[in-house]
Length: 62
Image 1 (cartoon, helix red, strand yellow):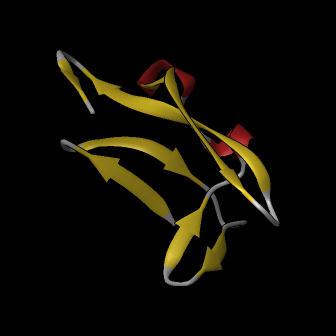
Image 2 (cartoon, one colour):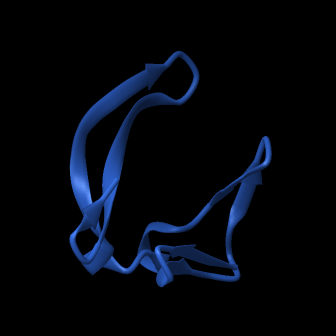
């Protein structure tokens, strides 16, 4: 599976996990030049603390 944003491949792997309709890529499948750590964190009672990344392609960041 390939994740594409703004016409750019940001992740690619045949080893994804689908949970409730969402595809999760292994960390090493991410193209690191398109990700930067976010200040956003959440806590789930059964998964624990989650950290997030912002996606960056050219001048666009989300």
